[in-house]
Image (cartoon, rainbow, N blue to C red):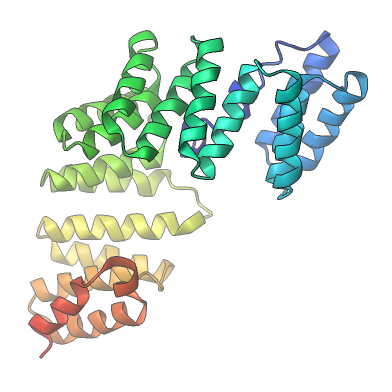
Length: 317
């Protein structure tokens, strides 16, 4: 499971196929959803069209068709299909919830909140709708309301791991680090193979100066990260673990991790800064100053601020 699924972007909760007219239609819709989840949008669209050929107004198929269009970078056509569906079925809660997702993606948060509230009024027992509401409040910066939404899910569904995960994020935003840590622990206990959960908990452990626990969590991220290293996730995890080891005064191990991170992702300005810190801790100012220059060359200041500039002023005269 990935964070995208935790963010309620999976179609499984939108396409329950309950409105299907026959077992054959249900089967075709299920196959279409499976194709979509495998990123085979062409096949998913073909199957959705097959259902619509029999029933042009089948709402689940129309939502799936809209989603396929959007994933295939024909967003305008997808949105038009969704609006047509809602004009015909204005109280169809799945379509309202899906439009809420799209509005939130476009940062139209007030409108997204209206839609998800309408969906919840029609289907109050849908935990994923309540989760989406919490995520919208989180994006608005209204963290107390976000916590209320996720707590409402947990009260009825105590094994809903993403509710704990997102509640932890919002508790951390309100500086309730103890509460956030407890929620991350619970989320991980319920679902132990999501690297993003360990990464979030590791950074929280860093804030609490619990560096051995942070090192352990970053190690778990390295183990669980996909082998194809999409978005340089493994490289970033090695860099983060290296920084945690630096904070734990294990400078040699820190350098090993950061050096390997830079082999995988040599454009990472933050890793050069972290390696400079490890060199400084060992009294190797020449090597540190060289790394600080590399960090600037890789646009550290534009991405992260003045820290490298200040370090150079202090150590590289």
